[in-house]
Length: 481
Image (cartoon, rainbow, N blue to C red; front, top):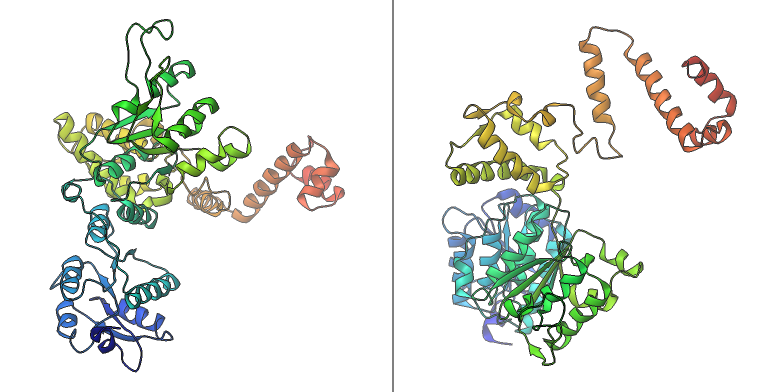
């Protein structure tokens, strides 16, 4: 062990720094590590921490990003100038893709969005200290161009912070990636970010939606064809694999690819070569595959619709892009971004949303996800009469009663019931409980009767009643008339 390592021990314990200007975060982290075999030192500023380096050199560092006198990334560079082997875990409550990428490119040990899981933090610190004591340090080739590339992936929700963390972690690694997410969530945007952040960013980014190409043409689209190889092949044509050579090939909706073409794709992934349709010469290609799907790939494998071995090759790293309803806190950010973008693109005045409109739009289910939200922003930019958008300015289909994300949650029926109750009282009527109880029981009985094929005995069992109770209820509710 080096003299520096020996000095870093106090009674045989490695030293761990916690650097954050938030006293509550320092307290929580210190408490989480109090039973660990570390000497924990807390600092409210990077400058104070650096002054303590000679006396308490750390074996690992937990540092916030945004601090008054020095940001966390600059602080990490200062630590690595003193000792490049010290693992630094970057924490932030303001996660974005740019910060995540820069953290890993600056040799961060890990990127930890707030709020975080205390057990996860303790595990990370254990790993970091072991890395330091073993003397291990990973070397990753940096891509200067990627650091300058602006990327417009917006999100502050925990689910998006996880996407940023994974993108930052694999940005410089030439691995195959599978992106999962519903239609309209922005899977292609994530694929483009992977390309722009990678060492292949100087090469082409070629996208192909496999679900949009007829089966008889998809093989030619992927691999190209020779002249005369089939009716209509009047000349030789390059396929997407050749076009993407040296870059990234994005295969959207990979779950819809026919099984026989899956076999050809697997062969390309295995040996990096293929034949054009009708061709006799093997063509070598150097392509990174990024695939995407909205489907459950494991289910497709079980149904025999997707090759299991191909899924293993595509699923080296999987990124889950959350649905918009799963990150409602990002909706105001996205609305602001796309209203600005659409106004500039159309050469029109940028619209502002009233507080009521913002709250209402944040409560919607958004089945079309970000794509649907952007379409609304385009419509409002063109159609809203004034600079400020009010409820009456929204499209008619949104002004009508719609399901919110809470209404679509089968375990959360209390909120619509609450709205119904409030409307009942505002109407000036009395007997709220009696009216609600009758409607409640009527709905349950109707559902049970439908599910049982109108069989009274079976419906009573579904309801947890006896048949006589069911008969008495239907009579009192006027359902037997």
